[in-house]
Picture 1 (cartoon, helix red, strand yellow):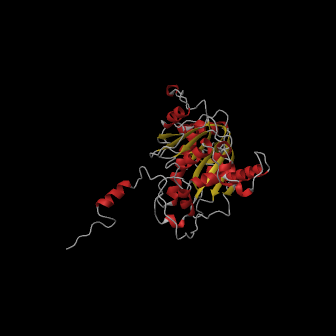
Picture 2 (picture 1 turned 60 degrees about the horizontal axis):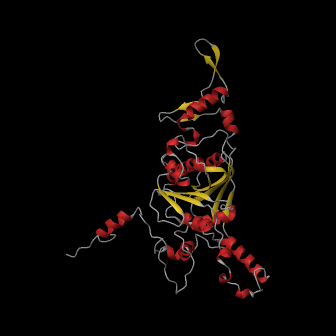
Picture 3 (picture 1 turned 45 degrees about the horizontal axis):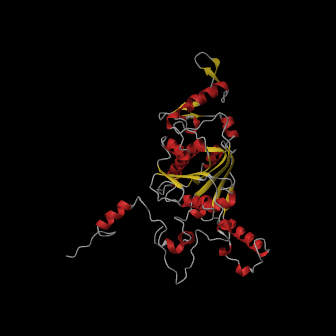
Length: 396
């Protein structure tokens, strides 16, 4: 968040700097919380792909400091004002005399006890009060022991157990790849990032927990919704008002984690199956054939024979595909499960795609937290050494 043309056209970009947030994405999490009450009964949280730390900053201020924002802050102020007017906390006061200074620190803040927040990202992140920061790759199996040790210092990595005795209540993932502009490729890479985040979530999330992650909506996103519904009782797609309508970005909100019976999560065997998919499918097909037998005729002998169909086809890349008979495939052709889609945030609030006029006396603010290790740092250094964007000019 620096000083650029965005400062003039993006209302949430300006508000983030005015309210002290590291990035405008903080409003997305706040609006999701207003809609789904994500922070209710939550004390242990994991923030994946956390840099630059705006979501961790929200967690720190809401859970550790006990601050309230948005509609909850307004309702809280209204309730306290009425209580003061009725003389519950002392003599009745005039409405114009009720200010924040009249309330004690205990009245203004409601910090929670035994809060533990772990933030993970490949990029370095500036520290935040009460946040445990890990510089690690969520797609690597070695990250799970690091996370479990951060959540529980008594965890023994030699036990090879990928479950903690103190599971977390909420897992967040606001990560996204560096987009290329090729939407199909970007959606695929984002889905793989979400796949890694989900596998890690299954290792640490308690039953009844919540999972929120960024997705890019594409043609086959229905499959993602149906897969998540296996592990969560409720799956909803949400679009915060602070997220630009012109963007394919959305957030998948998964509530009430209910893993299937006997399921064991592991990053070494994603989704609990790893490289055993073909064997599992073959065993299942042998027990309960999904494809009816086919009747074949031998043209040389003129005889008929019955042979079982082969629903499993393994390609040269080792990927096993399961093919259903035409009758069954046609029956499910239009049977898609569509997740609910909700718009979050106050509809009377700022529009993320609109431009707003600025007052003449407005002062451009500095970024709350400058980038620690931007990927374009080397490019800027090379441009500066070359004398600017177009290189050094020479005078003949």
